[in-house]
Image (cartoon, rainbow, N blue to C red):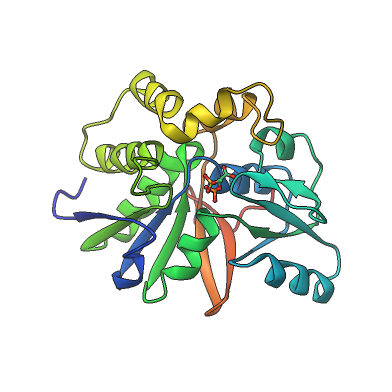
Length: 241
Ligand SMILES: O=C(O)[C@H](CS(=O)(=O)O)OP(=O)(O)O
């Protein structure tokens, strides 16, 4: 444990100010879905900001598939919705995923000055904490991508607090976290049976705490393109799942 690590909390509106070690958090749902996509065998995962950029990249990358949403809803012409429940049952072996989401991928793209970027949700929170502890940065900046002026995003704040608590030995109980996810404004959207793009079962996939033993590091290809890697925390190798 390193109690000297300083923790800062920010959102999509100030993540451009972070210059060192940044953990971009999106529980509902981008980085939960991304982790399940790696687990389902995805070879490569690229993240963009705009829908048009995703379509353009798709024409350039063989064997690539589009995954994402706009405000939570499926994008016509995309292969997959941003749903961990849906993606967990798909065999993505050897496939390249191009991801565009409303909050999560925006946080990656907008963290323009970060030296190191991780993508995190509850399914790889302990792995993320372990990666931070191994690298011992002076400061960690959490980008809580779901936070909005109208009070959304508590699930991402909870995840940041969970990661911080693991590092400072003040671990938050899973029951408390699950309640926060379910009662969050974003979580409520998944409890309406008529919205099939926002299935209730996604909440169970999101609340599968520490299911995966890999951190997701973000490699900046250019100002508009990020590539995610799943890094095994036990030996630092790139995961081949
Ligand atoms: O698909 C999601 O769950 C959200 C939709 S919204 O931003 O909350 O409207 O996108 P994500 O980028 O995964 O947070």
